Amino acid sequence: MTREEQLRFCKICKNQKFDMKQGIICNLTNKPADFEDYCNSYIEDSELKQKMESNKNENEILNKTASQGKRFANYLIDLICFMIFSFIFGAILGIVLAIVSPSSLSIFEQDNKLIDYLLGFIAGMIYYSILEATTGRTIAKFITKTKVVNEEGVKPDFGTILLRSLCRFIPFEPFSFLGSDNSGWHDKLSKTRVIEI
Image 1 (tube, rainbow, N blue to C red):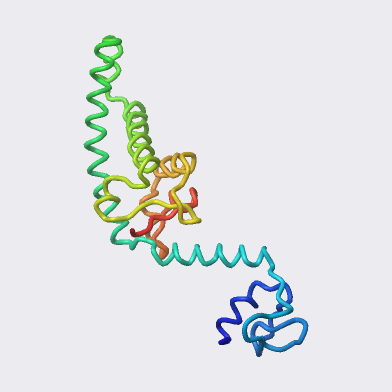
Image 2: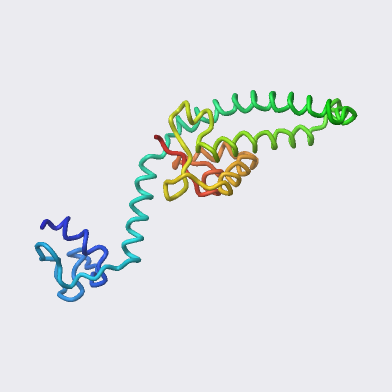
């Protein structure tokens, strides 16, 4: 057995310890592993094993993280799609209000920034939440072949997607991508990532 193959056991063994000069060694013999097929002193440490598997998954996700270029493309494409969706949403809302309560349409005749922002917020929550909760992708993510995953690399639950969508409305949130890790506040706060497929 090679040292690499032995370390697969030693790294998750309860009888291991770390030596500055030799690396991982046996706590019983104070020497590096020297077994061929199986170590008689091997006792699996389930916590270490789980931690190693978690780190391995995290590293795989980080290696697949979408580039800043793709994230910027996602932003621009989704912005255009969101504007189209908002127009359709507003038209449908106007038709429904005209049928149900025609007198309430007068609220849209005034220039009310609060109403505009509220309708934009509702439309944004619907656009991002429905698409990402059902498919893990917005229209832009379909085009750029990316998707949203949680820290374990699986599709996030609906609550996580709602939090992610809500965080998009934090003032100056698009500027949070200027860091080096290709993630914005809506990624960090919801503990999600956008990865390439």
